[in-house]
Image 1 (cartoon, rainbow, N blue to C red):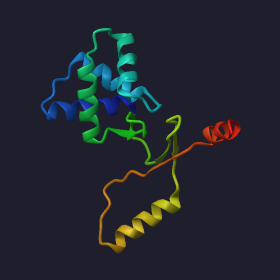
Image 2: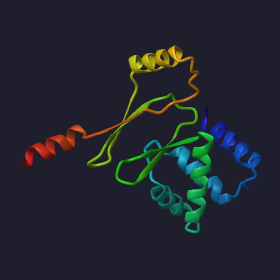
Image 3: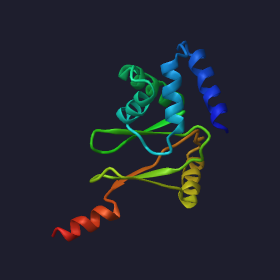
Length: 150
């Protein structure tokens, strides 16, 4: 799906859910869709304020909540009390490994894990609509750093 199409889908959804499609909300959505990194709400706010210094913190947080609830972005707890987001509309499914030391996020896809999850669901008569797998641990770089400090 092209970025313009993604934006139209989200605009229709927000309007249909009773939200106004303001310049600020449009900027927030465009900025979130344009990011190919995992970002915090505060990072999104900073990026938006480069283009419009009047963007409201509350509007960023509310818009992210609505986008997450609708499945357009996915929130990821980083294990340190923080959250990072990524847009998932039009992107292939993947899972995450989160470093509990530096909060680095590694995306991965494992077809064998996907098959096993589907098989487990089938055995239980369960139909999967969506899922999210998050592995928390220590990344290679932090392991090396910690090994060097011993």
